[in-house]
Length: 309
Ligand SMILES: [Zn+2]
Image (cartoon, helix red, strand yellow):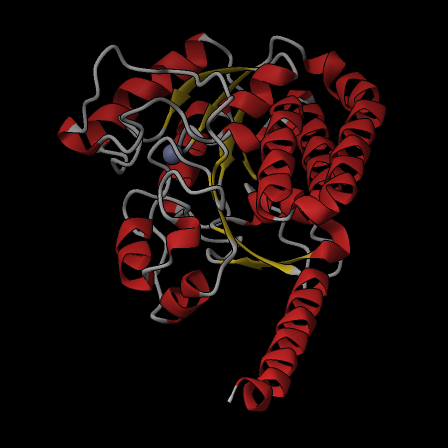
């Protein structure tokens, strides 16, 4: 009996070994909620990871159209990267509940919350979702600050190492390369926006505060009375004279917003409207540095045009 079973056991062990070897060479399946996190994950993981993004880059990250296909994608993920700080609260939890994937459950090594390790702006004294404020834990739109993106790359690399220790050196190399790329670009970005230091801008939603703050621009108001609450006539009527008094020359709007309110405020205040991406959108080169580079150029050009009488 023993002799009969031995070849079977040997065969089983051999196939298990093959399975382990194949598994080790497979790319790690990474799911990112948004395109900016996906871009950083690709920069860190390179060919060792296969990254899928849930939200479209032209979609409001707070209100993503959650498709049934997201459940299967989340079910098969080795790593799930979310922004956190309530960014995805409106749509991600039901997907993860249905996906039933312990590898990406809260607290598992495969669950990455980018906000951990980031100092958030506008953190309220107490958690408060009253009146529909979609930033109850502070402003979650930190990925537009390239310096913060380096911290997120560190967090992602550490998670990749925990999930796939055999390729940890690959991930640490990717992390170092990403950091170096940002450091190399930062002086040029700062120089491009230096002539506009102290310029006051208004935005639709608090999407660009970290980005503008990094380059010395000041966000003095939003078209939304509170994050996630649509512009109201009362709010806009008060905003227009405040913008005139503070000489605001630019209203910065996300690509997915309606234009009637921004256009009305622009016309009433004399400011210009700039539509600025919040995520890497390019199909050919959706990388993070190209995205920030494009935004810096577009912003510098719009500020220049707005101050020319
Ligand atoms: Zn928001």
